[in-house]
Image (cartoon, rainbow, N blue to C red; front, side, top):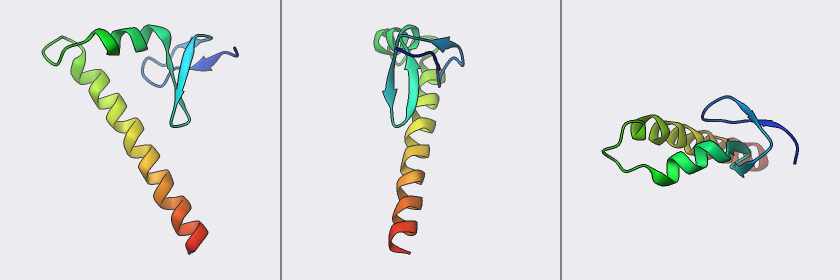
Length: 69
């Protein structure tokens, strides 16, 4: 795999998943999967995933306006 910049921690990694054209490293994936809402760090990752989702939705809207505009 190639080296990419993690969307959540901003570190480079070769172990990652791609989600909505952004990358999340394996370390952050593991943290996200193991957190409970009351855990320290939950709100940080919750907000990062929310931003990722919002950016993706904005890109869909832009593409629809461009394609049907």
